[in-house]
Image (cartoon, rainbow, N blue to C red; front, side, top):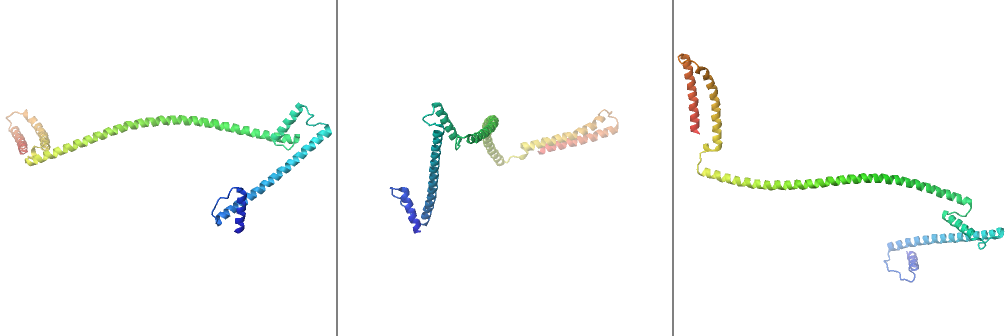
Length: 273
């Protein structure tokens, strides 16, 4: 634990330099977290130092290769950078720029051709991808157009539905108002009917003169009249007979008696009601 704290304090002092180290609570958890940071930082610094050394070594190698090539050009061909004409220098610079863009190690044809082929393949794949994306984009545009048309249709349906709901709401409100009026009127009529019934009861009114009783009496009278019709039809054949035959006279008398009995019963029912 003490070794971890010493290492953490040393690392914090290195990180903050001249600035004071912020105060923190020293416990097992904080020390473990800071110690893990120390290890990660040291590993990262070690990797960075190795990368720097590798880059420095490559720079030295490239510089040595460059010096060697300059010596070869100078001693074998008798050319130097200063003795090159401007077009040759421009071509050489363009060749170097292409080599750097293509990411090749040298400017030999064996290095340029694979790099060019790789970039050509990448270009072909990119064009294929672009064509695929264009097809997908056209399909999306068609679907977007159909979606916009559907959206417009749905919006029109929504507007129609909103207007219809507004009309139905107005009708429903009107029905509610009419219902309230009808309920109030029914209540008023019920109160008046109860008062009228109370007045009739207080005056001992006969129930036979009510509308319902009169209607029932009229129905009974109509029924009796219907019963009389067949009897009158039975008398019709005898009305043309001469008054001399005794049998006809007997039948006529019997029919008259029956008719008189029915008229008497009808009058009694009327008087009784």
